[in-house]
Each structure stands twice: as structure tokens, then as C-alpha cells.
Length: 320
Image (cartoon, rainbow, N blue to C red; front, side, top):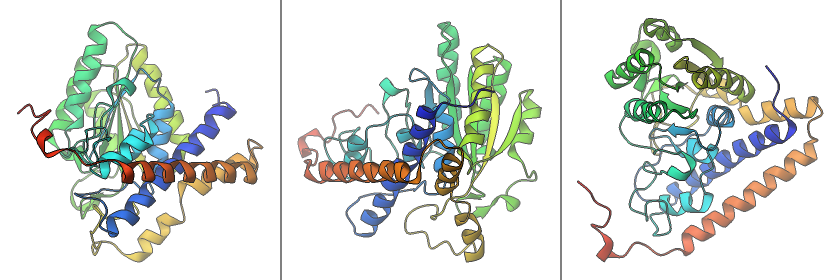
């Protein structure tokens, strides 16, 4: 497989930093009481969304989860509109009425984050079926967690996608916990990718903290889908640094486990690879990080300066 060019590699580095900075700010502002509602952070999992979305074209689509900020940013979501939405402001993606778990941008192929575990599979099947019916070469990626992998909706989606050879890539983000339940207590298999065999599709396991490993696996799966050969399942082993939601005391896991995964931080790992390969100097990478910080600060300023929705708009855009 041909290695990604320098431009793509540096874009991956920038995207991972963008997600990290965005999420770090949300962690800070949620604790300060500035952000309403629930927030489920993606800190530590940046390599999965970045590597998977780097393998897609703008016209391809993704479905997301309740932990969807990273997916949306990796697919090109607008920083200012995302921040404003999470702040509950009128300039946000859903006019401030959807919040963290309901960001979508159809122009970018972001079919929506949502708060229902396992809801992405059926949506992704619908998207992929539409593209096959229209005879386009567009592919849909379905992000889902290890908890969602046990849901009937996910299993039905795997089955249907394979039976109809839909152009779909299932990207499982296995962070080891379904809310507070460790994987070993909720499923008999160690590798979720093993389940792919039951649906006659390829299933591979990759290091989810290695952005290039994710990129390469998803690129191969996307090529297969574009050739009309049907879906694939890519399981990315990773870890969420924070609890299931902000405010979760995380009493169900030990500090040693967290520290082991913090040592596998995907961003410095990738930075080291870029420097050792002569792709960029440490100073160049630092300049990218500084630029990202400024962009996120500008998004925060935009959100804080934006108005709240008018009370008269309360029932606008409500369909059911």
C-alpha cells in the first residue's frame, strides 16, 4: 500500500491536535459550569477518527455516536459552529438546541452524532444502500463502540450490510468499557473483529492509538467497498482517558490501567514517527499545535459572544 504523502500526514497531525485541544477545552468549561447538558469526551481516541476519516473523500459519509466530537472534527466539522452548539448558542449546528450529541453536517457527509447506543448501524446501512441504489462510488463509515457491538441493531446491520454487499465500513472503537462495564464481563470474545466471520466479511484488529495503522486498515476496507465487494469490520483497540461522561468518578478502573494507556498517547507517538521519518521537524509540529490552539480559542470566543436561541423559536425544527 502506498504511504500517505506529506500533506496528508501533517493534516492528520493537525486533526489529532484539533480534537485534543477542543476536548480539553470542553473538559475545562464543563467543570466551570459553562456548558449545559451531558458531555462525553473523546480524549485518548483521536487516532481512530483521524485515521478513518483521512481514508475517506469529502463525498463519503459517516455515522457517529454519543462520543462524536472527534468524528465530526475529523470529517471537517466547523470548529466555531460545533463549539457554539455545545455552548447552546443560536449560531451552532442545531441552533443551540441539540447540544453535544446531535451535531450533523450533511454537506460534509456527517450524518449525525446521537445519544442512542447502537443507533449508527441502521443509519449507516440506509446511507450505504442509497449510494448503491444511485450507483455512486461513495462509502459510509459507521463508528460504534464496544458496548454498541452487543446491541441487536449493530448485529442486524452487520448482517444486512453483508447480505446486500453495501459499501460500508464498520469502525469499532473498542475502549474496553461499555459505560462502567469492562469488556471481559459483557462478551465472550476478546476481539470484536472475530464476529465479522459470522457475517462473511473481513474483520481486522488494529492498534487504535496508531493513526497510520487505522488509516491503512480503513483505506483497504474503503477500496473493497468501492469495488462493490461489500462491508468490512475494523476493530481499533483504544482507551478513553476520561469517564463515560464528564462527572463520572471512574471508580470501576484503576489508576495503573489509566497510566498504562496515557503512556500510549497517540499524538506524541505520531509526532515521533514524523520527526524520525524526516517529514517535519519538532519546531514545525509545534507551530501546527500553536495554530490549532489559536483556532480553538477563536471558536470559544465566537461561541461565548453568540446569542442564545430566542424562546419564540422553542418549537421550531421539531418534527415529532
